[in-house]
Length: 309
Image (spheres, one colour):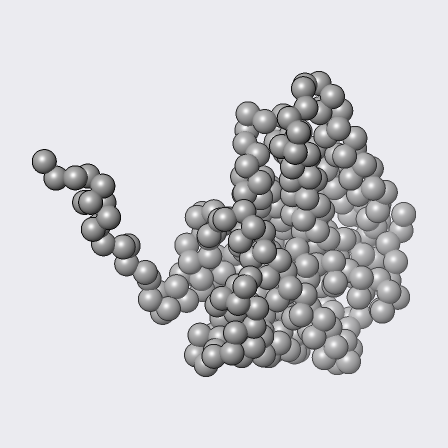
């Protein structure tokens, strides 16, 4: 009788998709996302924009919790998901309420309230059962990190959308465009001529040539969106369109590398498999989790905008 183990050992490895196939898949997934975002922007459908933001944030949170070995049967998991949905729902309700105000506003104290409530809730849950040493602490830290890393950072897209500026949705669109072109530029130039490894102990595929491509993609997207929607981006000048992509490009690369750190430390290849050629929702929004706060801070402190609180 043949040895099953020897048969499995001799089984051929799965065929790795070609770079062209991976690029086509990534492009298709990106185009589908762009179609949804563009539809919401052009038709002024705030609810669709929020649905996309909220849906991707929740999916990314689920994937992040799984990477930290937190599953549906765990009370930390249930609390984090429930509070995240309440946070997103409250934000959506607030934004709908103030949509007709002369200046769109965003109440920053909502973030402070939900961040504190999340931490208080996690420790309250811990007191309901016996401690399990480091495992308990890892679960608390994992749930806290997942909430801040995905939900809190990604919802800065909402802050950009509701800063006191006309056509706020176009500033959010600008942020998405620059971020995604950064990713595409890094992939294209890194694939074509990438030779010098950037940070091999974290992401072996990242090269310095890809980093240059990322910045070129950021500048190209910034100028393109600025020229196409100059009237809608009335607060932007050419100077902003040349300075901001540098900050966003660096933040996008850092966000991509940050997820690589999480995946490598948790021994996970992809956060999920719902998006062909990309992986999971977290693989799609990892860069946006870093570029959205940078975009908000730039508009707030450099351009002099301040949300009403």
